[in-house]
Image (cartoon, rainbow, N blue to C red; front, side, top):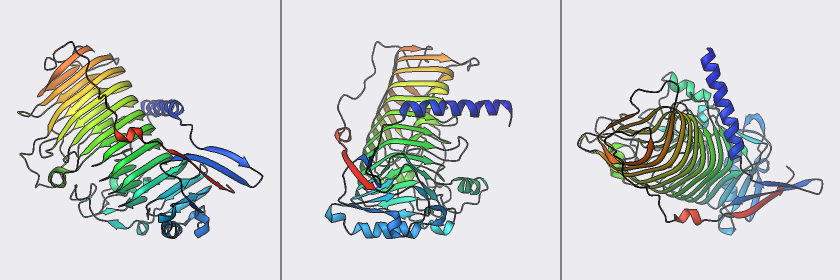
Length: 474
């Protein structure tokens, strides 16, 4: 490895350790009870009346034996008590190799801090699932896609949590297939929840996902918090958290190192997303940190053909990341990105602070509507500090369909040792700026204004978690 590459890896590692310590949650509490049992308390949407351990259903935590059937048997058995107070399945200390398995309603999957769920590298343990109707085809290949490691559809009240237990997708197997162009279907995600409501994903460490890490889609009333997500920064498409056609979602207190966007907000792809017509809206992202040298801290799009609206982002840190909050779209996407509010970002070692792209390609097929122009308006940024930046802004709208009502205020950008000559490169955008350094482009003239931030609270912000517990010989 060249010295510069070694240096970059070292700097990324140091940054990751620093941000992890900064955001490390004070999560589940461990208390000894007598000599044989212990009690763990944790926070969840709902506590459960019934409880079981994976070993009750034949689970073997040696890292070699498949536990797919054990997970399936456990969840099937526990689903029978869903009407009677629900159930929780505890994954105890050990290494639990498994293929894909499906969750059930009124259910908690709890991963112990000394447990590791390992994704199988046996492709027969990853069944196919139907294509997403808002995408029309797979992302890696058109013909199909594989079920995620942890999957659920049409659920109510489902919790995936732990006291910082680990889920390891063992993604290197899948990354190699993808890079060698040997994928005939789309790679599995780590966690995917579809057509569901009252969802919590929290207090876990996710590593080496085959592709996207957390993908809630066509769902509502979602809390994602206290996640630590790690993937090599050159791993393909390992997005951290991707809310997709979801309503009323709260993402907070998490840290992501990724080979792609740390958070990518989505709502469908070209004509399929336009037809399905389900936006992502009422989304709050806060107290979040990111490292992604080749992608965005937060991306809005590019698959945004159902629309994206009412997004609130605050208290975000990024280090060694390509851009801050990026908008990605293009002709054929249609729909809109509107009413976006961003404040209190701290950025260090960035290619761009502001980046908007109106000519993003990548279409599902040749049938996309070339007259489907996205509407981008009401984009607000304020109170941003950035250091060691190569270019302040690259803002490219669409000819005759400019991005409008852009507001940027109270921004201080310090440049890298070798910055770009043109700091604000703008085309087909309209808006205003105030107290911004370096001086913005002429298309964003100065106006005495403080850019707005939404004052109301989203319903998901007022959802309170309950204190729950499990006891056993852990």
